[in-house]
Image (cartoon, rainbow, N blue to C red):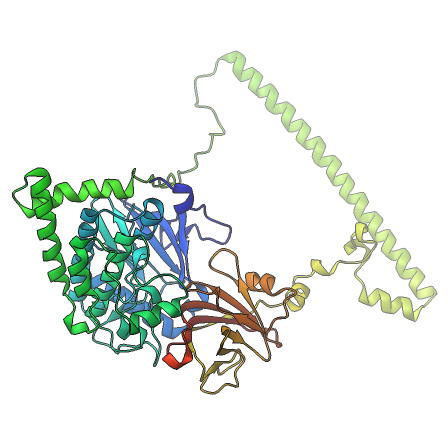
Length: 550
């Protein structure tokens, strides 16, 4: 696979070129939290740099979450995870760097080639389960394991993205009543805002493996809310799965978390099957040898040719100036005489030029003084109050710019520019906002409301769910991820709609809202659940940024 133009995007004008000493090479992606870039360590190892959005970085609660993410990632060490290399939660902006994994995500590989063969699925499950062992051993629950968070490196899978990971020794919910994760790969207890444990990740592992084997989500397509409803209320249809892996995936997808397989059991089960297949195909004697043969062969079939990673830019080199004087060498008599003649001529020319310049300056000063005397004489002989007022308010003749017709432009006065230039609104971040049919959000403080009197409300009817407002204009941003204030202004230009149907909205969608006061808000959707209200699963979970006009 070599999709360098799709994976490695050139840096744009609003992208930094340097983050904490790391020189950025290309943009890898963007989302609600920030942007991800390719860079290199001083030793030449490629790394992925995640840079937090400035408005989120200004929020103390977000910084605490980000600091917890860094602390959690430092504790994870495993062969099938992307190791944290460096980070700074107190930086401006905050950032972290992990080893860059060269290879497609599972979702990209399936989209390109279709379902994976059984040996590749077994290798995938064993590797991801081993990664979960390392993650859980550090006291962490990933909470968002899915095909896009599993990268297929040439030596096995890698589990990435601890952006919403949760230390298992803290509360199970970041916000009361909020569920965090991707609906299509949630466990039932996660979808219903129940207790999230290590078994929650095992359920997601079963769904991810089923996706790899089927080429599509196990619980079907359709709206995320409908998928969540089926996950909670129905048994999965495993009949379409290859017979060899049905028993293991069934254990991973048990409704009761206590009945699910552990990651260690998944690893052992897969290795036994990989060893059995290898014995048949290659007369292997040991599981480790079988893994070494079957795994890379399956991976080459799945990932295709190795992706070309852009090289780091050359290091800046010191600027060397050309010497003004040539290296000295002995001069002969003729050369000395020639040099003395040149020096004499240059000196004479300089003296002549200085004399002319002095003469010109003298005439200029005399002429200016003469004009001032004539002006003062005229002013004293014929007094004109209006002219006097104009003279006192306007600059002198010597200060006026001829091309402006004697008027000094406003832009020539820096103090005037600073007093008249409009001030850019300062973004204020409100991460992890929950909207359901009982509360609302306000654009002005306080934003969190337990009633329905806020500016933004979540409503569900027979025709579907939507966001609505009595005060503000709402629009969906259709451009590149990472909308800014200017993006929202452009999206809302000429817009007059006060409601936004959520049928086309998914995790990662960006919604712009304009308040009559001039304040503009950006909602980055994290989770959308729009099942029937009677099921209790209808809500919208989003990070909100507000640019205040005053």
